[in-house]
Amino acid sequence: MTGSAGLAAMAGAAATRGEAAAGPSSAATKPTFFKAVKWGMIQDGNTVADKFALCRDLGYDGMELESPVAASAANIRRASEATGMPVHGLVNMKHWEVRMSSPDPAVRDQAHEFMNQAIRDAHAFGGSSVLLVPGQVTGPDETHDDVWQRSIVEIRRVLPLASKLGVRVLIENVWNGFCETPDQLRDYLDEIDSPWVGAYFDIGNAWRFAPSQEWIRTLGTRIVKLDVKGWGVTAGFCKIGDGDIQWDEVRSALGEVRYAGWATAEVGGGDRDRLADIAARMNRVLDIAS
Image (cartoon, rainbow, N blue to C red):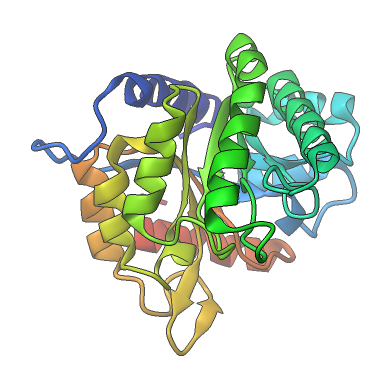
């Protein structure tokens, strides 16, 4: 499947999920995946165009960039158009150090500006989302309740721009001490209560707290995009397909919620051979025809 076809299909699926009631569907289908790689993982290629062409040749459908964007915007747009490889979204790379949950209002204002810039960048590249970690539980000045309340205020501040530009704010489940159960993340998203906010579900990150398939069934159609990695109790983070994740159960749960969208590798990158191995592993665990 070409990257442009994947982007169009994903956009339609995302719009449907934004309108649908969240929860598993009684009519399960085989999930549809558009395979992507994160920009920082690509260590081969001397130019932006080389990196896009490499990923296309290895069977990826698109890629996810980082904001702030280090590469030339013009070069990225040219490479994307030349290869048919869309930029499906961006990761806000400032969200850990400049947090929406900070006890300092000045820092929260700065986080707001970084997020607005990421939304503008995503729109400029034709992306449909920005991945956001909404905060971190750090102590008495940044408790779970603080992260919940402060981040919701700040996320709502960026929604006018997000809705104007057609870019969704997607919350990733990470090891930040926040929303570490499926029910908590579901309730957090529901309190924000916006079609422009959803879940960027990390299959590997979730397993430490509960089987990934349980998260998927609880979050349902709130899930808009996926990060893919391996994890195990003894192995820790590991190669996709290694570790303890029950990939057949994950696929079944994604089928129940009728998932159709991007699945992006988030693992250690490398050269052509490493990226080819990652693509092959994604094909295997997600049952994608190569």
